[in-house]
Structure formats: C-alpha cells, structure tokens
Amino acid sequence: MKNKSLRLRSMVRLAILLVIVVLLNIISQNVYTRLDLTTEKRYTLANASNELLRNLDDVVYVQVYLEGKFPAGFKRLRNATEEMLYEFANVSGGKVQYRFVDPSAVETQQRELLYKDLYDKGLLPTNLQVKETDGSTQQIIFPGLLMRYRGQEVPVNLLENRPGFGPDEALNVSIELLEYKIANGIKKVSQRSSPRIGIVQGQGELEQKYLADIITTLTDLKYDVKMVDLPSTLSVAKSFETLIIPKPTKPFQEQDKFKLDQFAMHGGSILWLIDATDADMDSLRGKPYHMAAARDLNLDDQLFRYGVRFNSDLVQDMQSNVIPIVVGEGNPPQTELLPWPYFPVLTSYSSDPNDVRLPKAHTIVRNLDAVATQFIGTIDTIRVPGIKKTPLLFTSRNSKAVLTPARIHFAILKEQPDPANYNKAYMPVAYLLEGNFTSVFKNRLSPETIKTLNDSLKNVGFKDAGDYAKMIVIADGDIIANQVANDGNPYLLGYYPFTQQTFANKDFILNCIEYLTDDAQLIETRNKEIKLRMLDKQQVRDQKLGWQVLNMAVPVALVALFGLVYNFIRRRKYARN
Image (tube, rainbow, N blue to C red; front, side, top):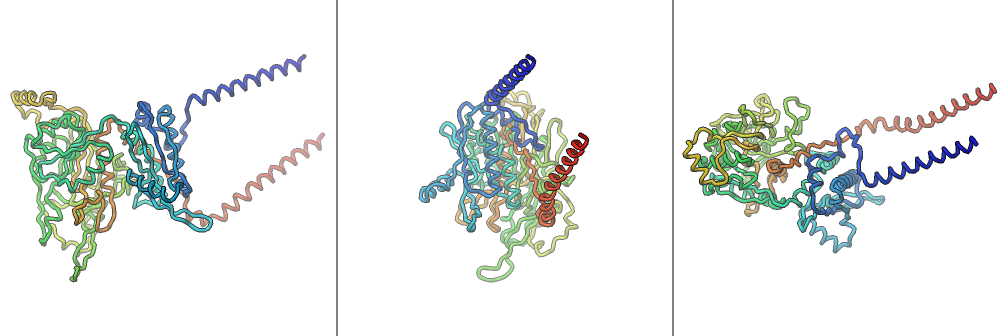
C-alpha cells in the first residue's frame, strides 16, 4: 500500500513537471525576451530604435546580399547582421521581414546584370579573395542591403572602408554601426515627409559646382534640398529644418542676419561653415606670397550671442595634406608633393583616445576617419547660460595658430618643420551648440518695429528667446566643398586628386546634418561600442607549443587523477567491508 502511494505521488509530480515544461514552451513561443549579459550591451537596442520599430504601420522588406562563401571576418559581419535583423523583426512585431541572397549564385549573364543593377541602386561592391583547397579566387560581393517600403527603396552599405584601419578593425566598426545604419535606413524609407535642408546663397557662398556631391548625396538620402537666396527671401523661419551656410565671403546685411536669427529662435538648426580669413589657394596663384587678413562677415555679434567666436588666425599643423610644387624645369615641369601646413588633416578625436587633454569623442565624430581641411582657423567659446558647447574637431598635438594679418608663402616648404615651434596641441576648430538661444536683436528693436514684423511675418512672429535648437560651427568653409576636375565634373566630396585619397569629409558633413535634423536622435546609436578582443599574434607564435601541450596533457592528467582517487576510495571502502 505504501509503495502504491509513493508511485502515485511520483506520477503526479512527473505530470506536473510535464505540464510546466509544455506551458513554458508555449509562453516562450509567444513572448519574446532575452537577457543581454555582454559588457557593451551589444544586443540591446537604443530607445530611439525601439520607438521607430514599434511605430511602423506597414512591412519593411529587407534583402541582404551577405550570403556565400566568406572568410571568418565577413561571416562575423553576416551573422551580426542576421542577429540585428532578428532583433528588429521581434521588436517590430514582424513588420521587419528579411532574407539573405547570394548574388554570385546566379548564372554569369544574369549575374553581371544583377551586379550593375545593385551598383546603380547605390550598393558598393568589394573585391574579396576567397581561399579554397586548390588555391584562391577573386569574388565580388555587395556587403549591403536594400529596404523596400510602400514602393520606396533605400540602399544601406554595411561595410566601413577605413584607410587607416586594418581589416579586422574595419569589420568591427561595421558591426558597431549596424544598428545605426539599419535603423536609419528604416527611418529614411518609411518617413512620410523628407527633412527640408536649405543651402544659403547671396553672400558670396560656394558655387553650386563645389556643392554638387553633397547636394546629390542628400537628395539620394531622401532629403528635400533647396538653394535659398537669403536677401530675396522674406523669412526662412519654419520653412526648413536645417540651414547650411557654406563659406560666405561678403558681409551679411542686418535684415539677413535677422532672418537667420529668427530661424534659430523658432527651433531651426544651422550648420555654419565660416572662413574667418581671406586665405585660399587662388590668392597665391602667380604671386610670391599673400597677406591673409580677417574677413569681415558682420557676424561677430550674432555668433558671440550664441556662444562662440571665430578667431582671426590660421592653423599650421605638422599633420597636414600635400600640395604639388614645381621643383624642376622641363616639359611638363617636374613637380613634387610636399606637406602644406595650412592644410591640416584632423584625426585627433579618435587617434588619441587615452590622452586626458581630449574629451570623449562625440557621436558625430566617433569612428570617423581623417578629415581634410584648408586654411582652417580656431574657435573660442563664450559663457552663455543655457547653451551646451561640445568640441567636435581638433588640430593634432603638433600645431600652432598664426594671427592675421599673416604672410602666406611657399618658402616655408623648403624648411624642415621644427616640432618645438608647433607647440599647441588639440586646438578646437568645430563646436556643437545646443540649447535655447537668445536673439541678437533682443532689446534692439522698438515696439513699433516688432509690431510691423509680426504683421508682415504673419504666423511666424518675432521671438527674442528661442525654442530649443542646435547649431554646428566649423572654422573652415571648404570642408564641405568637393574638388572639380579640369573637364568641369565634380569629384566626390573628400576625394583629393593629387594623392587619390578619399577623406571622411562627406561622412562628417552627413553626420552633422543627421544630428541637426534628427528629432529621434537615432544617431546616438553610433555610440555602441563592441570591443575587438584580438589575440596577440606574436605571443601566440611564441607560446603555441606550450598551450598545445597544456591543452592535451591537462585533460588526460585530470582523468587519470580522478581514476586513481576513485579506485583508492573504492578499495578502502570494500577493504573495510
């Protein structure tokens, strides 16, 4: 009777256990959750990404072209992309649907057409070397994806090509940026209206041919870009999300300053690209020297009120770009590329992460490659209540600022630069300003003038204290300008034809515009950091034999020790019996 009762209790316990297991399986299939135990929280989506995905009202179809035989690094990128899309699909409630495609698996003729189609749509190919048993082969891959939503299509390139990074570092940065790139792609393809960007003209700004690449790129990224002739425009307030002011060379009239001021007071963002001096390469053409002087733009009081001051100086930096210089006669003349200290190459925001003199890199410049500049100046900040000021770009640790008027000449190229003279480190040349700005016209207008303005501006109206707004000020107007070939065709922004190197100017400008226009702050997802825990290859070679012996001998020794102890205990036990 007792055995029967025990058997019944055991069966009841077993049945309860089975019911619990079944219920847990049913719950796990309908309720998605997981714990992210990684130190860098690589599997945790940002709040902005979660909000974007939960607000989708239709399905986003994603076609990923990362499929095929890849080396280990690209497999890691492929798997990380799948994990990220899986997370996006779950958070969106199935409104993100994806599949992986191998474009090289189709027949040769169709493959060439497919490659051309992908390239035309904006996906950039990479020539990959694949090792096989009988050698290695070259394979063209498209490490990117296409997103489709209600007839709209957006390309997203996943691979970061960084000239200063090795393959492993470049792939790691690509994985770090996966959430930002995919979320930003979904935002672009699903947004109901395009962010409006105005490029200001009327004060001698850059000609449109020097802005051709950035205009084309912004248009391809679904921005609504328009040229704005400021003097002939009544008001720009509430007409755009962001204004770009690209290298003005003439003084601003007070009425035009007023339009920009009220644009900022009504919450508009401004990207200021200012050359505070009149130095450029054209001023040296055919002349032994140029006396650079301060450029009067009539903006000092306005920018001072917002919290910054452009200094009348020019940076000389030992970390600089090169220019072609004639060093010998002939037909054609002999030229040589020499470093030109007035063309600083900015990398200090990422190259010295452990230097206490540098603040932590802001989202806009994090993981950014070198940025090329021309005749850049420095910026000082002014204490303004309620305005947060964040430095973005710095000179190198070996630089100096030359006050204007300054004599610029090519003779300095004949001299070997002395590091002792370049003793100013990390001078800021670009700032992000955020907060509630105060109008430069506050207490400067009579009540009658304000009433007239309010009547003429209708629903806009005059404000002397602003809504929350953002500005980025950069002491180089050419940082946004693309080079132009001899035939008049524009190069890509950041491409330097003399060295055939592409700098990160376009990435930097796009990051600035994205930050200025992005209310959801998706760009904050660029802060995600995935540590690359790589083995020391030299140490691996030196200690290879020791670790091999350890891995083979220790398990055998542990098994033998366990056997000896077990037999010893067993012998003593039965010997007593």
